[in-house]
Every structure is written in C-alpha cells, then in structure tokens.
Image (cartoon, rainbow, N blue to C red; front, top):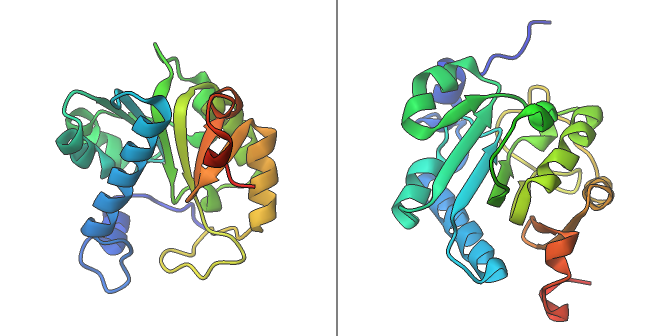
Length: 200
C-alpha cells in the first residue's frame, strides 16, 4: 500500500470546492474565534502566541492575524508541499506530531491547536507527542478529534476510531484537564481556575 500523500491534490480535494470537502470558512472562523476567546479568558490577557500542530496549509494563520494582529503563529506539519507552498507566508515548519519534542521553542504558547490530526495517528504516535504538547502549553490546547461515538465525514484513509474514554484517559495521563468543547488546559493552569470552570 502506498504512503498517504498530503500534497496539493489532497488539499484541493478536501478543502477547496469538492462535494466531499469538509469545514466551511465560516465554521473555521467561528472555531478560531472561540479558541481565542477561551484562551484569553483563561489567561486573563490578550492572546500572544499560537502553535498549530498538524496545521495543514495553515488555514488558522490569516484568521488569527485578522483577530489578533500582534500575535504570533507557528504551524508544524509533515507535508513537504504545505511547507514549500505556505511556509514563508504563514510561518509553517516541517515536522510531525510525535517528534514535537525535538523542536526548540523560545517560550511556551498561549494556545496550542491540534485539529483533525489525532485520529490519523497511531496510539504510540499520540503518546509520544502529547507530553511535549503539554510542556509547551501555557494556556489552552484545542485537541479536536473524532471518536467511535461520532459519525465524521471526510477523509477516512488511515483513520483510527477510538473511544472518547480512551482519549480522556490518554489526555489526562499527559497532564491535560478538560474545560469543554474539546478544549484543555495543563494541570497547573487548571489549578488557577474557579471550580465551576471545570466540568465534573
């Protein structure tokens, strides 16, 4: 079986004009705005920095720039195409989720985004990358994925459906505390929140 290719044809098929495509521009903008608002509420400060792991073409970057022009964005993705095409324009760097620990960053990030990525990774890859993700999160992490309880549309090649319970346990083992809507904070940040900010 050939290795899956995240090239221009892939992104054209799933993100630009195809009947099979997923996620409208309006839905994406709402998702970005929500993540920004929650992060600023948690930190009680304007958003300064975003790390987007498995960023694809860096679709979050122009929206974040519009919402918070003074903030910084860094995207990491294993696609040579997106780094070559959008790397300079949107500040994208080549890399994979499981090798995040090998990247050196000057400071942790206010918001970390990992959207529509985890269900394409093996359990070993997820467990390898989560500790580095948690270590680099100073505020909120959006760990957006699908589970066996969901009925997702879109690209199903290499798709791994796992239970919501598996993700909850795995995220907790890595030090993430849920705050709702697939948003999480590290334990030290959770300790600073009010009791009713946390579900359960």
